[in-house]
Image 1: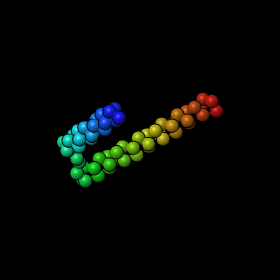
Image 2: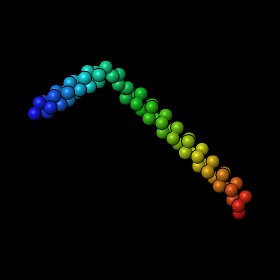
Image 3: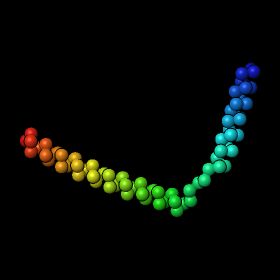
Image 4: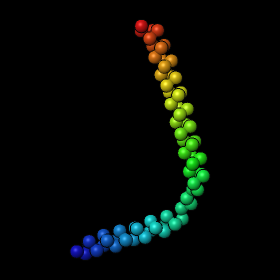
Length: 67
């Protein structure tokens, strides 16, 4: 029973510390989140096109060599 009480106390302390640390966090604004999301989506789109093009070119080169 004593171990359970210690465990609950540790959990309580942990949650209090988490709450204190979360108060220190600087959260991004809505505009920042939208901007970051656009950057990520554009980057993914560009990389997808580059990988598709490389795959296409390498596939054609290998076809030339191996028929």
